[in-house]
Amino acid sequence: MDKTIEKIVSLCKRRGFIFQSSEIYGGFGAVYDYGPLGTELKNNISQLWWREMTRVHENIVGLDSGILMHPRVWEASGHVSEFHDPLVDCKQCKARYRADELVANIEDADWNQVKCSKCGTTGKMTSPRQFNLMFETHVGPVEESSSVAYLRPETAQGIYVNYQLVQGAMRMKIPFGIAQIGKAFRNEIVARNFIFRTREFEQMEMQYFVKPDSDNDAMKEWKEKRFRFYPDSLGIVENKVRFHEHGPDELAHYAKEAWDIEYEFPFGWAEIEGVHNRNDFDLVRHEEFSGKNLKYFDQQTNERFLPYIIETSAGLNRMLLAVLADAYWEDKENNRTVMKFHPQLAPMKAVVCPLVKKDGLPEKARNIVDFLKPHFSVLYDQQGSIGKRYYRQDEAGTPFGITVDHQTIEDDTVTLRYRDTQHQDRVSTDKLLTAIQDNMA
Ligand code: ATP
Image (tube, rainbow, N blue to C red; front, side):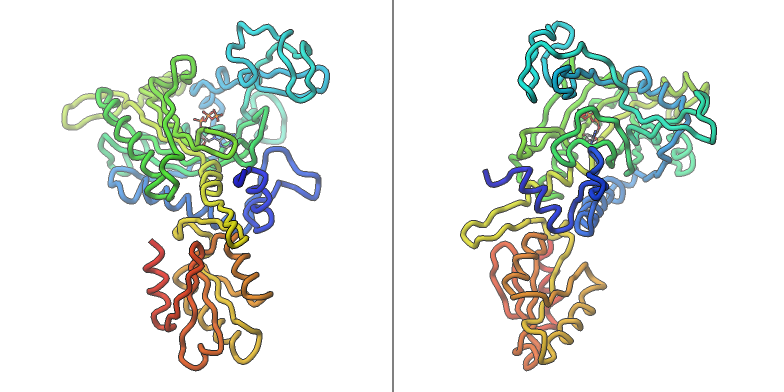
């Protein structure tokens, strides 16, 4: 198969997108570090999301709440009592599994019949044990139970506990939304598939506060909007995304209705984003646990009520993995690998190459870099043959290649090469910026 996760992992390391955490110490499980190109790509994706989810909507504003929160928040949210995964171990080889990934129905399963897919032994599985996914830490110098705090397992709760402050400060009227991008932590039992499931990750969430009787309409609206984001904004091939509705057995404790947006990764269809109708579950619980009145006052109708909440919750890292997988292309005809990122997402927009390292070409190429760099990310490269330089940038997904040659000195024109087609145009330097910008959309 052309697109395998192994090939993507290897390209990501080679080109500086993603590295295993603490690699010189043998790696640290299910945590990854983003290299120079990965950081640019991740920022481009999150900025696109931010623009789509806040700036173009007058009624959606942003928030950046703390990773550490009052521990009662997680009692109210249900995470202390509900956020468990069932865990089983193979007594033979010590392999660890999430029980629900091995059998369809955990309660009815006969664990003496279950086979370990690692060592092949049957009947050596332990019974499932519940394992809380939250990371615990202690605040202050003494490790005692009263100082326990959690690294947040989702960003949503930061929005709920601040919702009234945001609404009051910004004079928001229902329906309105609050968006947040930030780190979340889950002590996942089985972390696999590269950055798909990690213990530290970033969420991009928007919580939309609506009147209790308009939740179904809002759900419909946001389902549609979030789905369109993938082909329309990220440029992902349309038939690679689909919806999956949660049946009654899959619904989380807070949800009235839940849909996953799934992408067809090289390892199969899997969730990138959830769109959930959380009704008033969270605000009811926070009223109860904090003792504060969290009702919204509707000035038009003089009514007080707890809003219903529609949540759109995406994982930035999973979205990035989908973008990487979608962009990966082995151009067999030309014996090269190309990351066909949408130009808006590409970490580097252009590379400028002097054909040779003499005759004034490097200086001319540097001038072009200086001229372009206020507009977008651009790179100078004079190392190796021109073909090698281009192929390196094809793997990095750089959409435009500019070559300065001897003719440039004579008539101030350069060649402009397009990554996917390898077509080249001769462009005069005063038209270069417009030529690139025209091809960026
Ligand atoms: P899963 O069933 O895959 O564990 P989930 O249903 O628990 O995911 P949510 O709680 O709905 O996920 O979180 C919203 C989004 O956060 C997910 O769609 C996913 O993109 C992202 N996410 C959740 N857990 C992880 C993780 N361990 N690593 C990376 N991203 C994650």
